[in-house]
Every structure is written in structure tokens, then in C-alpha cells.
Image 1 (cartoon, rainbow, N blue to C red):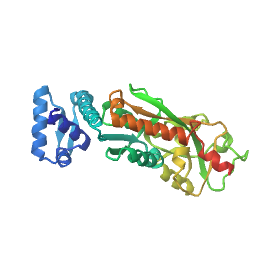
Image 2 (cartoon, rainbow, N blue to C red):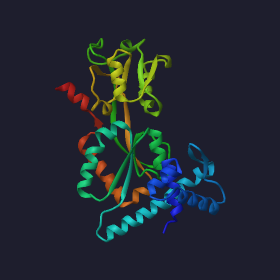
Image 3 (cartoon, rainbow, N blue to C red):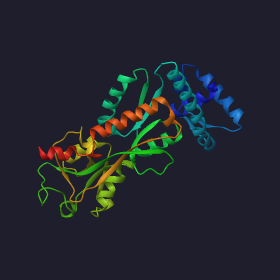
Image 4 (cartoon, rainbow, N blue to C red):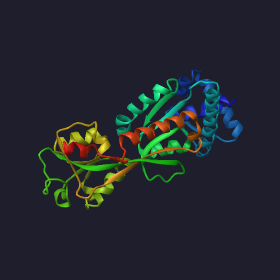
Length: 305
């Protein structure tokens, strides 16, 4: 059996404090502290820096985190395989996804998966691309949806290409009547999301020589739409992000198509877990049936109707 201290260590990392970890594991905070002290005594070095606001991993703690996570994941795989042999469907899946994948993809994927595997527990963590990749790499996530390419040593399956569009205030019409050109967007202010969400959209604007001082930043996709609607700037969003957002805005493709690639990532260890294997199959089935050409073309369909 896996030492309880390993589970405590992972839970403290996730929850951020001994108190929250105790609530999660249904033990006392002193039991959490005792387990961590035992682990540190066994390892010979501290794994957490403690403060009044919580705890943070030490440098050595960050080094051992993926190792302990692999041990816990292997234990979970063993339990799942034993359940399969005994005719049971059990286990858990931790999925990391960015906001538009959470909204548009995960509900039908999880709903269909649950029909075949009702006893498998599924948790979803909405994060940015970098956090998702690191979570899969470290073993705190089993599966992740992220933008490609990915430089970390994880298993990558490309799912779809997602076209990027220009979002303008209502009433705007491109000079050529159908697509946005460089002359349409010069001297415009663009509103992007902060952080790694902006890599592909920022790369698109770089092709039109939009300077950094012409950029503003917002929190999420719907906020960008609201700011464009209010006349505070223009937006740039991929098709998947546009499927559920609403606003009185004009949406046009660029004269040169730009895409981001969305992929599914997992680790070599977690890809072997029965529950993860089955979820990967369901995700690939959903992607191939929904986008048989591998391209998000919803906007094109709308334009043709």
C-alpha cells in the first residue's frame, strides 16, 4: 500500500494549506502536519515552506512532486485494472481544459462517457495552456486540452484546427465586403486575453504589424465581446470561443486564414490507466464525428446559410 504521507503531500500541494488538506482528507490539521513531518524526516529535507498564508513547495519539493504523483497514479491504475478484472468500472479522471473547451466540448463528451462508465469520477480543472501542460507533465492531471505545439515530454494527439476571426463593432464592413485586410485594421486598438491564451491571436496580429501599444487586455472571451460591443476596441477570437458567446458585434475572417491547433495531451503513465484510455477514445470519437475534416468550420456554415 502507498504511504498515507504521499497522499497528504499531494493534497497539500493542490489545496495550498494544511487546514484545507485536512478538510479534503477528513482528518485533523495536526494529522496532516504529522504526516508531512514524517515525510520530510524520511526524505531528509523540507518539502514545504510554511507561512501564515499557506504553504509553498521548496525547490526539493518541486523535484519530488512528479515522482510521488507517479507512485500515486500507478496505485490508481492497479486498482482500476483489478476492478476491470473483477467486472467493475471504477476510477477517476482529472481533466484540464481551457474555457471554450470546457463550455463547448466537455459537456457532451462527459455526458456520453458517463453512459458507459457511470461509476468513474470525473473532475475538470479550467486553466491556461501552460498550467494544463505542467499539470499533465507532473501527473496532477490525467488529460489536458491545450494549444499546440507542446515542448514538454507528453503524449500529444492533434484534434482540430481552429480558425481565428476578427471581432469588430456592429456596422463595420470590410472594404472588400468579406474579409479583414491590413488597411481595415491599421490604427485600431485590439483587446486580447492575458497570458498564454494570446499566443496564437497575438501571432495573427503580428502579421498585420499591430504594435504592442495598440493592445489592451481583458479577462475572458465574453469580456472581450462586451468591450468590443461598447466601442472600446476590436477583438480577435478563435471559432471555438465564439460558439457560445453573445454580443452585438460583427465577425469576419482575415484575408489570410489563421488557425490555432488544439490537441489532447496525456502522460505515458496515465495513458495506460483504463479510465484514461477510455476517455481518450471518447474524446477522439467526439472530435472525428463533430469535425470530420479536422477543422472547426461552424463560422463558415453560418455564413453560407
